[in-house]
Image (cartoon, rainbow, N blue to C red):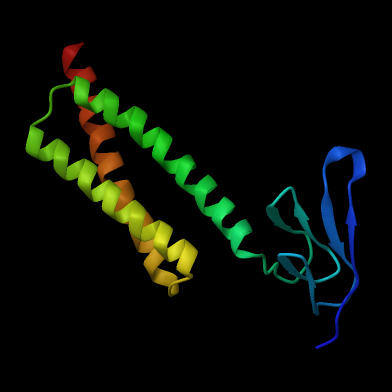
Length: 145
């Protein structure tokens, strides 16, 4: 496989790696990128070409963390509001446990690149307690009016 020249630039303070080539792979430090239009911008993987970006494990960790935070923070807010309506302790524990276990499975599937349906199913199952808690909160608010 032909090596492609990569150029590291620190244009206006935000570094980016730009690879020049026709969908071959290139390696630079801890990043592997394919296609002449793929960029790694501040450890965020961005593909603007027709080929995929094959990033380093550190980039994959950053993306997994970002994905987790996008889901966990809303759950914490929803869980706090849900706990204010006085749900059954067993039901609340079940909601929190299901969310926790399936978010962990989702993260492991993200980092270990498990087969395709694993990550999607883990995400959907983790969202079931969120929907359930939201419906119960809305029902409690609607009944108090």
